[in-house]
Image (cartoon, rainbow, N blue to C red; front, side):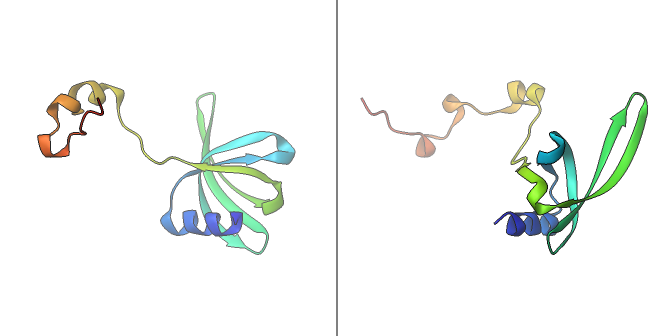
Length: 99
């Protein structure tokens, strides 16, 4: 199942967060570049002090403990200004009160 998920993320070019079990660390916002056999190749950037490093790393599937991906994101400042609330919702889309 992990293999299929990684294939989908590779095809969609979605950033993923990968937990490497044997090193007890997270690889953040990586792109799945290649998936061949039991090996996955990830490409990601890492910042150290004032330097930005680009990495390409190959991992065995059995060393991956978890894979996460971001479903959505939004700006908190835009949220306060532009997000519609229940009072702004058209009457046809409002939920009826249960009481």
